[in-house]
Image 1: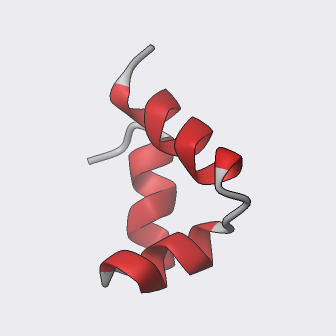
Image 2: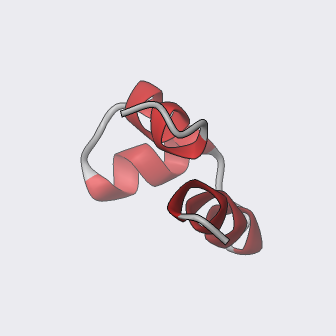
Length: 40
């Protein structure tokens, strides 16, 4: 399991949207989306 898969799996296990995760850690939703799609 690579990093992008782990981020998405853990986020979904917590029942969070990309927006909620982004707000929680202080980044943009677009950043989370890029991480999950393996774009740096």
